[in-house]
Amino acid sequence: MILGMPISTFTTLHTGLSLLGIASGIIVLLAMLFGKKLGLLTALFLAATILTSVTGFLFPSAGFTPARAVGVLSLAVLAAAMVGLYVFNLRGPWRWIYVLGAVAGLYLNSFVGVVQAFQKQPFLQPLAPTQSEPPFIAAQAIMLAIFAVLGLVALFKFHPER
Picture 1 (cartoon, rainbow, N blue to C red):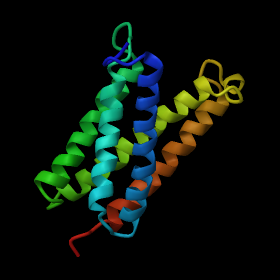
Picture 2: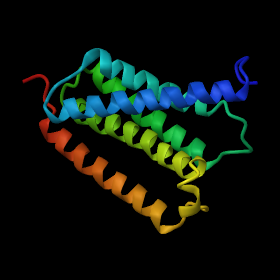
Picture 3: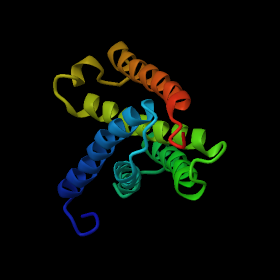
């Protein structure tokens, strides 16, 4: 039991938060590419992605794992994004800190989604049973390249104050 829920129910909640964070994050990122700021949807993205990381720490684990390292990194970049957005209102360097933090948070959530897909989906498991095989590496490399390009474009295009 985690937080009074069976592990299966908690896992469903955690997965739902993750998918909500990814879906809302993609919309927020696309808006950034057009120089738009989506207030409520951005708050939803940040909250869902933060809750995804926080709930990830509640799963039973032996020691500090790579998954927990990703969770710590995700919380750090999302904290920077929130400070840039809500404390400094995207002024000065806080605009690019927000953009990079938000894109990095979305990427890390998506990264874990790909890891989970290769671990849990029967059609993907045989392609990368140890997650060191070329299909897994290619999927992660392509996703990293896409997020890097979109993040750079967002850095130049996202100027909601104009």
